[in-house]
Amino acid sequence: MNGRIHIRQVMLIDETNTALGVVDTHEAMRLAHERGLDLVEVSPNQRPPVAKLLDYGKFKYEQNRKEREGRKHQRAGDVKEIRFRPRTDTHDVETKVNRMAKFLRAGAKVKATVRMRGRERIYPELAAQLLNNVVERLDTLAVVERPIVREGNNSFAVILIPGPGAGGGEAPG
Image (cartoon, rainbow, N blue to C red; front, side, top):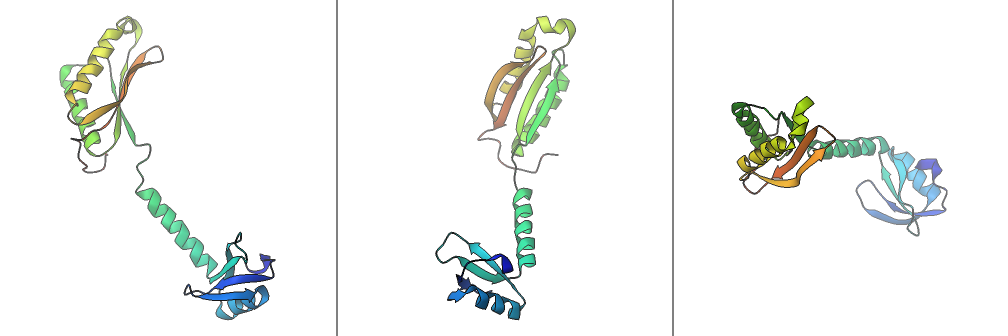
């Protein structure tokens, strides 16, 4: 940028994106100074390098704004976790399944986890049975991304992703 460009000639582009041709670097810096702009090297690997006349502060601001806007609409890593216990009552299971359905309709991944404590650990089939029940209830909305697996010594989990019937609604809350 400006005085840090140490090449003899540059391909100059003005602030309206019009190519001015190959110009001496000193001439390009003088032109930038006259117009109250900065001379920025945009493509240093070209022969001759491409430099552009622009307001560098405004350029950086616009670039940051575009990045923020792009991140705002990104949905990476949106995994919601719903926890169960092996002896969770049927009504509570229904409530949690409805919550999972809402997340799936909104486009989020859902992880259903059954955490077991104490003597519950000797009955892993209860956890598998509960998770199979949850997967069956959500089979019209979700597809199993990762089947039921044991996580550590005291929990089982399954990960569901939105399927063809999930649609796309409001954002998960």
